[in-house]
Amino acid sequence: MQIEDIAGLIHPLIAVAFVFPIIGIVTNYAWQTRQRRLSADKSKIAPSVGTEHLRLGRLLSNAVVMVSLVGLAHPIVFKMIASNAWGQEPLRVVFVGLMFGLSIVSLFGLNRAKNRLWRGVFATLTGMGIILLGSQPEVFRRGFEWYVSHYYYGVAVALLMIFSLAIFPDIYRDRKNRWRNVHIILSCLAILLFIGQGFTGSRDLLEIPLSWQKAHIQECDFQKLTCP
Image 1 (cartoon, rainbow, N blue to C red):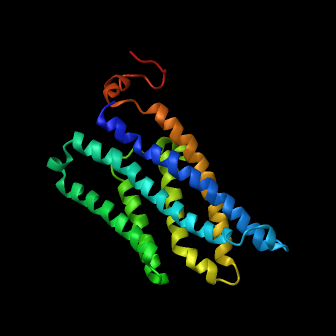
Image 2: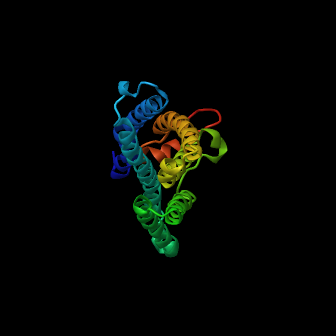
Image 3: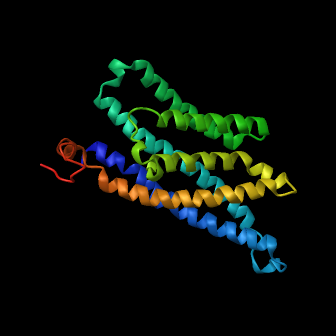
C-alpha cells in the first residue's frame, strides 16, 4: 500500500472505531432519557442519562462533521497533487484551503456561541464549507446513483449534526417541546442515514482500488463486467 492508500483508511477507521460506537451509546441514552421523562416512576432510570445524552450527543455531532472533512480532504489533496492543481489553478487551491480552515473555525465557534444569532451564523458557515468542499471536481459524488451515494448520505447527516448543535440550547428552553420533537424526528432520520453510511461505505471500500491498480481497473468494461 502506498501513502495515498493508507491515508484513505483514516476516514473509515475513525468512523468504525470512534463514531459508530458513540452512535449506539447516544441512541441508548436518548431512549433512556425519553423513558425517564414519560415514566411515572423516575427512580428506575438514573437522572444522569439526560446530561450524558447531551454531552455525548455534542461529541457525536462534532465527530461526524470532522470525519466528513477528513473524508473530503483525502481525494481533494491527493488528486490536486497528482494533477498539479497548484500550477494550473492556484486560486482554487487557496480557496479550498481557506474552506477547510473556515469550516473548522466555524465549527469551533458553533460550539462556543451562546446567542441564537451567532449559532445560526456559525452553523450556516460550517454547512456551507462542507457543501463547497464537496462540490470540488476531485470528489466522487456518485451522481448517477445519488440515492445510494456515500457522499450525499454523508453530507446530509453532517448537516443534520450541525443543525443539532445549533438548536440544542433551544430544546431546553422550549416549554412546548416543539424543538424537542424536531430533534427527535431529525435524529431518527440521522440514524437511517448512519445505517446507509455503513452500507455505502463498505461497498465503496470494495470498489476503490489501490493506487497502483487504478490504471488496470480503468481498462475494465463496467457494463459487461469484464477486465483485460
